[in-house]
Image (cartoon, rainbow, N blue to C red):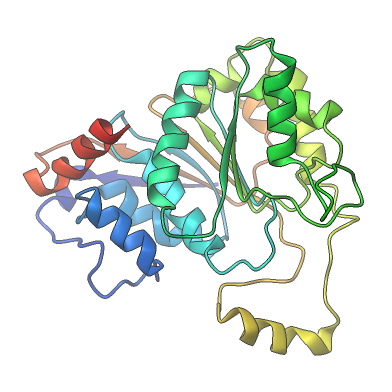
Length: 294
């Protein structure tokens, strides 16, 4: 375990342009969408963490105050890493403690994926309607050319799923063909509220167990890998069976080690943003504009 402290006051005097020389290799459509939302400068937590997340070497606990740009800190690397995917599959799961927060994240994700072929779906509780649940099943389950759900169907028509914990477990239990074995990113937003919830132990193990089910994952023959890597034109694309990177975000992180241990974190980095100084108008405007859009 390693700790990193980001001093906001040390950051604000520097220029951190989003476009610039594009060291994070953001796809053009994502840069354009950020520009339309008036995001032109990285915030401190984004500038530090996005390259580290894209390296896929660590799990992260990020302790940063509200308004520091946490949502984009995980959405941008996810969308960048998935931008070259060929076959749709559920590769990023974002868990939020409430329906309102899940919907807020979903609206931001839709704005950022405009012009791409990435598909984002949100599933939440709060409704006893069986028709709503069935509609969610059709949106997230594997489906073949006939549109029927089933474990042997061809593809999962969602790349990024945003869900509340209870609704996620409902789908794991009863939705045919729905699983998390292709997952590359697991994000827990407002993780303190999630792990301190009374039902945490009821859903975390089914989720992690579904993620670790790798038996049906496909790995190409070794002779095909160079050709397929060239076909994807993405040096970050991996065929080996990688575990999912876990990203935990909150303004206040639980100090209960037992609950954190249940998340099975590996190569953990704990990142703390220390507020200080005054962000420029250019930094603040994008954040305010995004709030207005959602």
